[in-house]
Length: 143
Figure 1 (tube, one colour):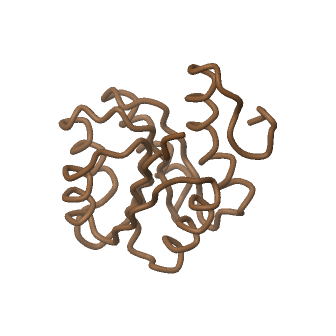
Figure 2 (cartoon, rainbow, N blue to C red):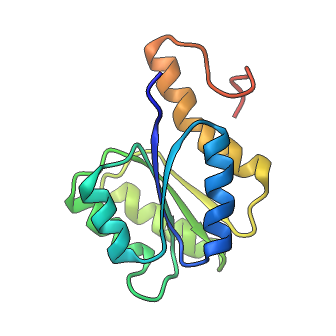
C-alpha cells in the first residue's frame, strides 16, 4: 500500500512533532515545515495528499497559504489548525471551501490524540472506501 504524504506547517516545533508522531503511527509519510516559505517549497517539490496549516505564523499566515494553494490547484485534503478563536479557523475554512479547496477540516489547539487521529484517518478512510479496500486504522469506519 502506498503511504499517503502529509505536509505540516506550524511554527510551534513541539506541536508539529506531536502531529508528526500521531501521523507516522497511521503510516503517513510526514514532512514538517515551520515557516510558510518552507511549506511552499516543500509543496512544490512533492505535492502531498494532506496538508495541515497553522493559521498564525510569523512570516506568512494561514489565509495567505490557503490562497496560494488555490492558485496551485491543490487537490490535497486540508486541515486548518489554530490556537486562537474557533471563529478564525471557521472563517479560514469558509475561504478555503469558497475558493475550491476540498475536504477542509478545522481543529483548535490544544488537540487531543483521539481528535487528531480522527482528522488524520478521515482522508485514509475516504480513499480506502473509494478503492474498495478495508479502512486503515483500528478497523472501524466511524468518524
